[in-house]
Length: 99
Image 1 (cartoon, one colour):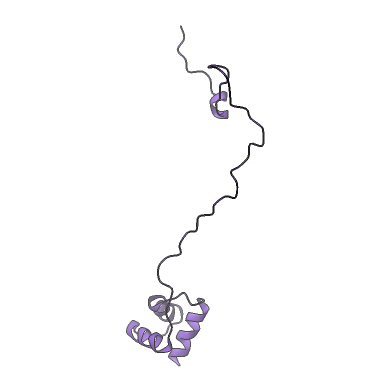
Image 2 (cartoon, helix red, strand yellow):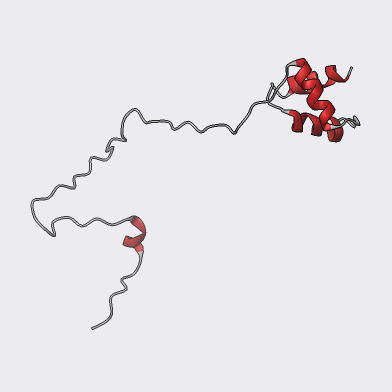
């Protein structure tokens, strides 16, 4: 009977819950008075075990680097032919000291 409830809790978690979470669900969530060693024993006999470790993050590699959609041209043949700033700096008043 208790093994069936443990199997149900384990199945509801899609096989991710281990001994500690199954025990917590039984005692706190369902009000079943059972020790964690008993849950461990019954899960081992039933062949149930949770997933170990944390979920690994998978880095998604971009297929291509973002293309220049506005066709900006930054190549210049000499100095002081092109000045670049961001939009915030262009809107701020100049902080240069008065002569």
